[in-house]
Length: 92
Length: 102
Image (cartoon, rainbow over all chains, first blue to last red):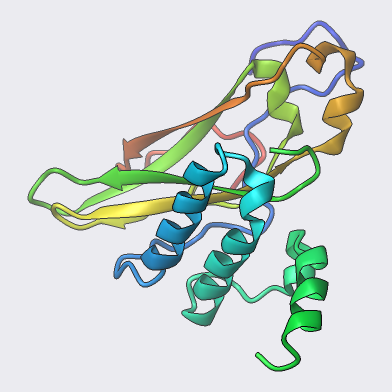
């Protein structure tokens, strides 16, 4: 690794992802969700915050199909969206 | 992307050959100093991934930018962070130089 002369700041080391790797979606099971998300991004001028609902739907798709470890959505940063969802639809 | 908010990004990879390839990827963040604020929750990287002949797959990355980013005066002028991945063909016994990751 290159040496950093400043001791006060953190040095950059490639880090593995917190929750591990996504298996590949070979069968394209969640491609439709991905397409919806990408379309939302295009319409919103690539503003990530505007498309979080669709991002959440994509991750839910993965979890339903064993393409991602099940994790409560609140822990993935979607807490505010979950509260909205449960207000709108009492049953899923 | 708002620091502290989780975000999703997609890359696409294609194997243009007619035999399966096992690949492994590593990443890079530009500007270099922004890398410390880049937190990956989940991605396709660091593990071997198999791509079948002619297969094209979407590769997602789920991440967030550490909210401390906004406190760092060195980052004040940074409004664009670029994340890039390089896919290598995995060779037997080859280890990517990833200190601290086994």
